[in-house]
Length: 194
View 1 (cartoon, rainbow, N blue to C red):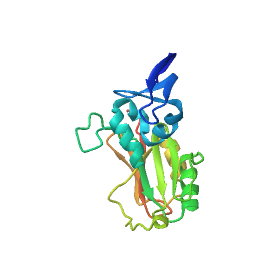
View 2 (cartoon, rainbow, N blue to C red):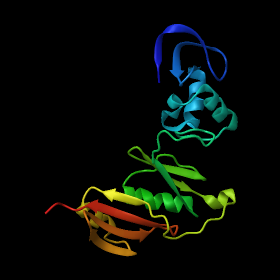
View 3 (cartoon, rainbow, N blue to C red):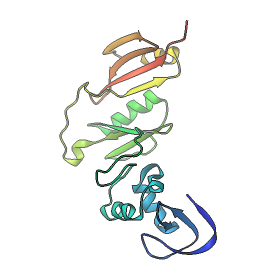
View 4 (cartoon, rainbow, N blue to C red):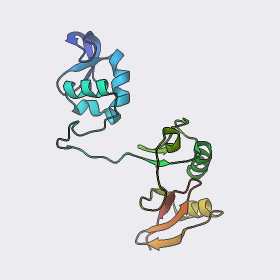
């Protein structure tokens, strides 16, 4: 976000109105505060700072989420992994399970897509059936959640059925469980150095 501090004659790349005192910079232009909310929702992680005005206009026109890289299959200059979602059949049941697992309330609750903000990582729950999608469940992709230490992990799994028993693998304690929706998940904690 760039605060210009002085009134500018620059025009917003989206609405064409004068940017005024406060403008937000992309690679080759600026947009106004009024358009910021729309752009920021569509361009995740302030990726608009690394985009051209043409790319931003396309994102706004298409109304699709965008995070880093090029829109039309060009080179990706920066790749991050900052979110993941799993499919759920019963949103309330899944939210309850993960609120208990994480020891925190859901950050964004919705009938279709709910989100837990885990530091800078977004873990989503997607009610796929409500959107008419088909999915199979299994263990081909296993999200992994790390606890502070082995004691905290053991307290969490104390009353859970384990699909893979608590085992030391290299520098981590690892186990796997199945959530209420049939998704396999891994729970870990760093092993103390001996």
